[in-house]
Amino acid sequence: MDSNLDVLIYAHDGRGLGHVSRSVGIGLALRRLFPELSVLLVTGCATTAELIGDGSLDWIKLPSYKTNVTAGKSSGVKGDSNIDDKLLGELRARNIRDIVAAYKPKVFLADHTPQGKHKELLPSHDVSPETVRVLGIRAVVGEVGKVWSDFSSEIFAGTYSNILWYGDSSVAGAGELERLSGHYGVAPHEAGYVSRLSELQVLNKDNAQGDRLAGVISIPWSGEGTAVLMDTLAETLGGIDASYGKWKIFMNLRESGTVTAVENFSGLEHVSFEQVGPQFLSDLRNSRSAVIYGGYNSLTDVMVCAVPTVVLLRGMKDGEQEDHAAVLADKSSVIQNVLADQTVTVEELRKSLVKCLEAEVDESVINLNGAENAARYLAELAGGCDADR
Image 1 (tube, rainbow, N blue to C red):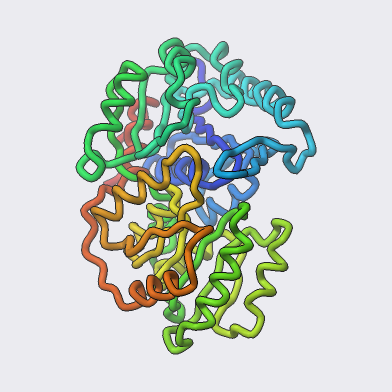
Image 2 (cartoon, rainbow, N blue to C red):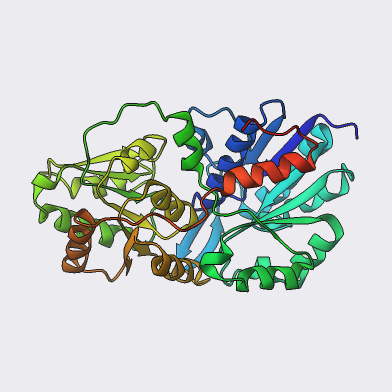
């Protein structure tokens, strides 16, 4: 095959960071284990460079999508380019087609759906026919119509040949694997949970530890319940003894409205704010507790770092986070409590955080080596050499 690239990774983007973070983790593992392979990531996520941190992974930036969430349902709006959501999908589709045509990757990994967001991968399926196309699917999909539609299975059958499943059947059972196999007609390859932080830990393993934190709180994007939650958090942290240590709240400080949220914490000298980025890794693994939303990316973060955690849920219509958090809470002592972000009370949150601060975490039984396993699988498809062991 006349190829200019070994592996091209496409990351679905819109609201959260889970899709991009998984893709970055796999890309970093490919570059670490197989330095002779050429690897590129393509996505519209504006914070991708911050997710990559000091890792060696190059990427191509597309204009970003933007999504609003109302009553648990996502809808597209104009992004930072101020281009209409539908038109942006058509323009990005041409961009992706041109990239695939120019680079002719040996392997193409698409996250989440075979058609891509707004069907933007469809034109690229007509070029570089020798490219092996692989679909990556998270551990618990939820009721996402674009994944389970007849259209997605038809697109997969005509273009793709492999599925990587980023889960652990010994934890969640084989139900999701069987459902994927029945829908797409191939047996998925079980990789395990993919963690970007596990790859960054390898890169930063010699970094000195800082002062022990009481906890870190991650709110990577704001939704309709964020303002109420921030009020609850401010009152909660104000009522927890400062002798436990300092708290750091990670948010996208570039989002409108965050200034008001920060002002709620004035006078709490043991609380500070940080921009979402690589610093979260070192602070998380040096914390006694964590508060996160129940997305795939955040759940794997806290499991890798073995930090007792309170999981918040946004109440999305697809039910993915509720199902996933319930499964993992039953198997991992890392997840101390699961609470709804819009209804949690100050007393509930305070008790949960104190419980985390005093908790001991058992050794994980969950396969968290998904980034490495996925990288080895993709490298084999690309004809790469054995990784250094």
